[in-house]
Image 1: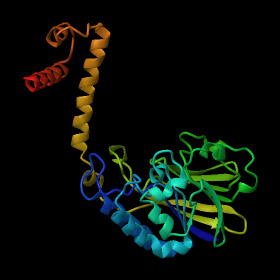
Image 2 (image 1 turned 30 degrees about the vertical axis):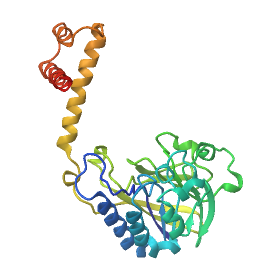
Image 3 (image 1 turned 45 degrees about the horizontal axis):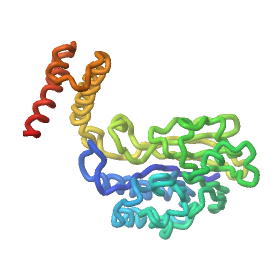
Image 4 (image 1 turned 180 degrees about the horizontal axis):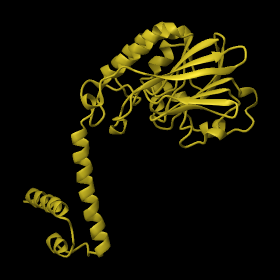
Length: 303
């Protein structure tokens, strides 16, 4: 039996995403260091893609992350995500991305291919990176010699692609890309698991705790013995996200949408003065105040 650790979607970046507090890059590095600390308890470590948030991510930061993972090189395998590859999502272009440091620093990955079979110790794997023909591989009814007992894929399996169509002849499919993730579960003879992104990139992640998957894999039988999701130590959501800024922006957008909807509903002539248009609309006071403030600001800027 082999013990597997699976994690996905680090989205390394030196600049914090919108509405986040603190040092985002350091937060991700701390989580990667925690993964490395757990690694001695596992025979193999698998990663599901999107190591960087963009191909232009800080080389210094990516180098630090690759150095942190380097002790695992003999038992770590990974695929590329679209954020690693940038425009076109072509694995052959990995050399133009800061994720290329993974290409040179670690051994077991898909390289410049979208799909690769490999043996990692006793594991027979198929690594499926995000690439222009990914749908053909995911949905192929006859996978033939490309079939492997374990598939690691960067694709929206369970969201964009139905589970039952993506078995790919495997007994275990580990997927990334969908940050929310989903509970481990079988579909026929195939188990699916995605513990969700290691990164919390947007306010949508406010209520989500990053996790990794701990899997017991029966080598001889090629079957899943157990899958458990393990929470990753991280800062509490209120310390990470600026919830007040998000709610204020959402309220502002709501007022703007209400005004636009009122214009469309009333069939207002686009050349009608805004004051006259407002007078003919039944707008709630906060919306009216919002529009009038925007009008005043625009008029002052034009003077």
